[in-house]
Image 1 (spheres, rainbow over the protein chains, first blue to last red):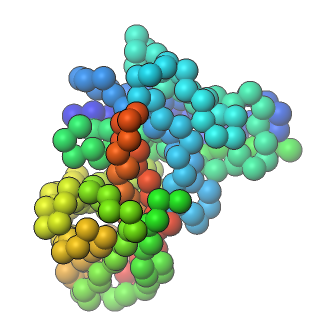
Image 2: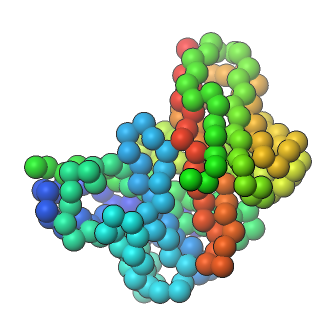
Length: 114
Length: 114
């Protein structure tokens, strides 16, 4: 079974600082990896996804993530945090190509300090 | 916008009563999912469907049943609601594309069992 580990349930950064949210996965087959963002009382919005076309994936709102097979990681970064980035972020992996269902990490809440 | 509508969006119900949540999609996607979201657990798969009348269990299916009699509707039923089923429920669809599948989520249904 595949799994996802997000290191740090809460991350706090200053406005303008680098954002780094960590995600490690376990998979016996090449994975599809995703990052979603959830604002309070809303659904999940897709930030970006990795599908093996390129190891560096660019998403919306200047977020990007790099797939590193040797480290089984897919960390999410943003060069400069905005107040509007405060939200919860979820890393997820397709659990098997049969049912095509996502397995999620437990989430990281990002706080942005003025 | 993946054309997903969930209803009801908010519901309070009593222990032991049946509850049905509805997910409606407008784009004829084959795969549909029900997840629940709880603090510290991310999202967990309850049931999924891969076509009309074709459904299967996810990781947390106990106490839930589903039905899909039309492509556009996927119903989640709690036969006899318990307090442990107080949660936020998200419906999702899988959009097939050249770069693989992408899963999109509805806005969520907040269920409180008292």
